[in-house]
Length: 231
Image 1: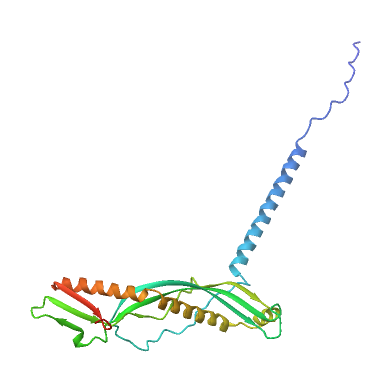
Image 2: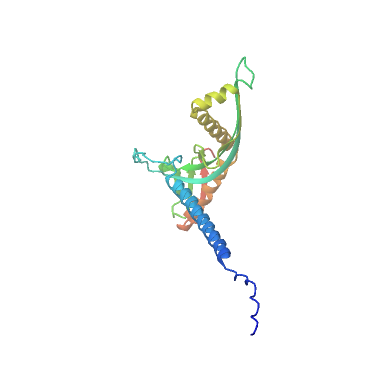
């Protein structure tokens, strides 16, 4: 009788892929969760920016401009001067130190001044010609200065020091009067600078050159331009 072969011990079970599959599923769930969170954050920010609960918007309810008058201008804009001035305005209290009550403002004012010659006042005797109309003499008034025109884009407050009481006052109520005072001072200083410059002399010279070229183009061979205060 043939002996039976010994029964082999139990073979180890074949490995399964359940653990890696569960790991991949967990990573996919985590990635999907992160994508959802990112989309929610981006959507919330876009919604907040669109709603903008604390933002401001400007609404222009101004009335249309009304035409009050029309004037015919008979003058030649002969020259323009550009000026810049630093206004140093200081206000002190009589019995309080500057740290308590007092202001000092440095304001940069930039603007222009036009110089013009007015032709409206010319009389019949201001222009004289010879018999054959080849020579002409013109007598003009001297150039005048227009009011300064400040450029708001180039005019600004450079530096300002304020006492405690002034800070509190500015916090409680706006003070446009102070800004208006700075603009008035800047205009006055620019007007003084224009009057002291050679702007009017330049305008007189430019007007003379313009008239000489114009009258010669009309056929005059000799053109003399004088001003009312010249002999």
